[in-house]
Image (cartoon, rainbow, N blue to C red; front, side):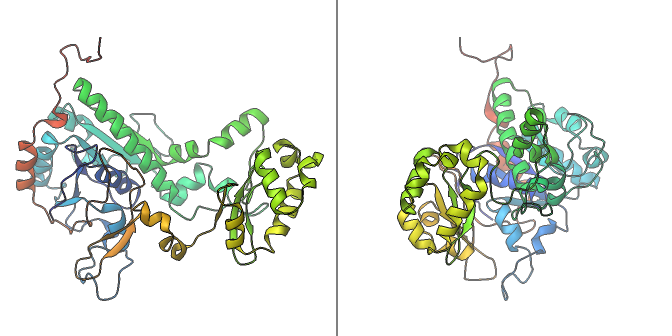
Amino acid sequence: MTVPAASGPLNGIKVLDLTSMLAGPFTTMLLADLGADVVKVEPPSGDRTRALGPLREGDDPEQALGGYFQSVNRGKRSVVLDLKSEAGAAEFRQLVRVADVVVENFSSGVMERLGLSYEELALVNPRLVYAALRGFGDARSGKSPYETWPAFDVVAQAMGGFAGITGPVGGPPSKAGPGIGDIFPGTLLALAVLAAVRHAERTGEGQFVDVAMYDAVLALCERIVYQHSYLGVVPRPMGNGHPLLAPFDIMQTLDGWIAVAAPSNNHWRILAEAMDRPDLVDDPRFIDNGSRVAHVGEVRRILGGWLAGQPTAAVVAALGGRVPIGPVNDAADIFSDEHVHLREMLVEVEQPGSDTPVTIAGSPIKFSATPSRVRGRGPKLGEDAVGPLLDEWAASGLPHDAAPRADGNDDAG
């Protein structure tokens, strides 16, 4: 596959992607959207998600580009290497010599057993940024009692605190709909890679970068940490409410559901006027956000009772742009929303074996001078070859293409 010429801010950055499933591929997907040349290094069997689907009937007879794979591997290239063989490992080291970044999400110890640990690869390329994403991190950053445990999204959501505060009041814990236990760690790892690449450009020094899924989800749930520290409480599921803001909820309308977040006094006044309840503005129970939080049951009863008799579209027409509100959209609603089309958040890509493209989510990161974008479909397994790739990367110059000062410090002044 010929990947479109990059124009993003990471144009020229060369990434070797050893990841599979969701968390790691989401990291390298972000890098590819931002212009990096990302090459998936796959075993002969390929990434496990290639055949997971969903698959459109009649498309992709080889079942190599299911929706799961397409979504987070778009704009990448693919080479096949058996890293368990001496020849495959040797070819990989050749690629490392001219690469900027290696990203992997193997279980702890796998790369060491292959003779491809960070320390081994740093001897080949001292500028290399080596990024690892595991359930419980890497011992280089801090040994975990769970270091050897496998982990998936739902495990990270559970152990990191997210599931314990999600769900109906008084109900059981619940995971999120999207795989945030994968996606948020993957996003943080992309940020960490960029910071490490910046350091390598300035100093010529590569480094090991580590994100644990558990740690990332805990960071995402930062509120429970300070609540427990300040108040000694153990936060539990709160439904769609908020412990510190009111009204802040998802409520049922006459024909659907709508999110309402109006904790400021001005927003509460606008809601009171819309409900034809001016008395609520000066009511001591609702006079400020703290009072509304203390009487949140009454807030929900009054606001929820009014919303239950209103069509969603009427509420949006009356309050949109005046109060933070939004309808609860399903996928069909999103596909018909002008916003996502104007913002290029639904992108069509080629589906091999079909004349009809498929749609995947676009890049939410926008730049004025160096646009990010989806740079094409996901690669077929082994669609690229190591030899031509090596020639291309070697011709493009040293990793990072930066000459650090002799003292390792290129700060101005």
